[in-house]
Image 1 (spheres, rainbow, N blue to C red):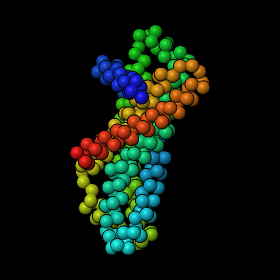
Image 2 (cartoon, rainbow, N blue to C red):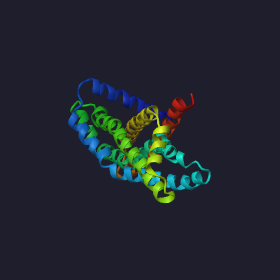
Image 3 (cartoon, rainbow, N blue to C red):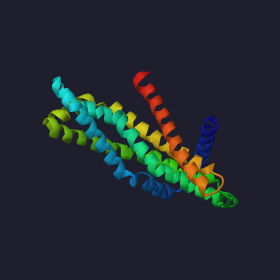
Image 4 (tube, rainbow, N blue to C red):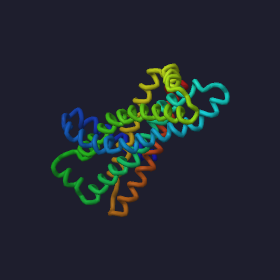
Length: 244
């Protein structure tokens, strides 16, 4: 784990050199952004809506019994924005796009396409990693922002349908509880999660040696490692902003 973390840091430094060297093409970043986040938008929004609906079902009747139904909107908004939306969206994108990144780069490695790039005196780490990391870091927060809105809206409809909570009271509770700081931290989380998932999956794919079997193994390990690193990063960010 420590050796792999060192490889990730080393590859990230190579990507920074590639960016500041003026070698990055915007068109490549745009195509990767479409593959990573745009194509993952439907599943991300479905997960956000269902998650908020489940939370609303769980808390609505309990809050109603204690006379605290005015807190339902705020509770759902805080949970969605602080944790559910950035975490679940990142996991969905990691499962869909992260594994694709790992499999793609691993296949390039085992079929000697990476060696061909090296013969052209092109840095393969910068060439393959940088567009994917940058695209994920920029676009995952956009997906998270939409998912937060859909989630809060889904919680409102479920609360309205289950306990007949007036949408105006729900919305007032959301605005009363929500702060700009929560949104900023949520977007920061999404940016870090997106870049981290792309970096970890690309690094795992780049380290692949062998054949088709090893490509599958690397893809599976990339999904596991990216989830672990994302959860650790989530814990540290929460520790920094909400506890420290």
